[in-house]
Image 1 (cartoon, rainbow, N blue to C red):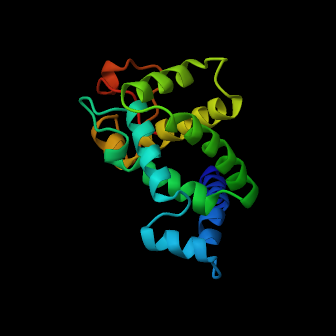
Image 2 (image 1 turned 135 degrees about the horizontal axis):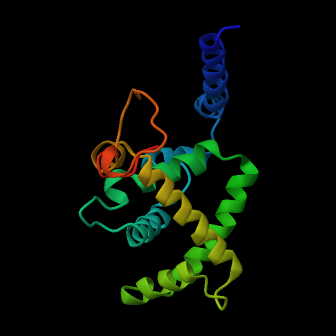
Amino acid sequence: MERRAILKYTAYATGAALSAPLISSLLVGCQSEVATAKAAEGLAFFSGPQMELVKQVANLILPKTDSPSATEVGVHDMIDHMVGNVYSEQERNNYKSGFEALATLLSKAKGEDLVGMVTQLNNGEAALPEAARKAFTSLKQQTIAYYLSSKEIGMNYLSYLPVPGDYEACISVEEAGGKAWAL
């Protein structure tokens, strides 16, 4: 078999494997009343107040600097979509219980206290509840991953080459345009 044919079939198999969860989430016909109400709000998983908390925390993790903030590129919407439509029922339940622990902890903090609490969570303070720390770590990882893979950041703030050219293994960042490469 030729190398091109192997690459072609590998690409087809990878595309099918990655597309299956997304396609299955689109084919769900029956929804509960809660899911229907959230769909009317445009939310797949979080309630309105929970989404506000996700936005606040995401913007504390990645605030606006010379690049857009997390919510300006839609990270919060992607988190809601992925948890609500792609995660399995068990994964959603686990995420929900962790997020509720995080929300309970953060509901006690406002303004500067919220920044301090998020800093403590980021530093892994042992005095904070384990479930809240794990939920924060998960939210932080999602925020960073979806931020870096957003179209706005990939095309305008990272080096982006939609059709790669020749492979050059050992080049400096300056030779790559002075920026890290988008995924």
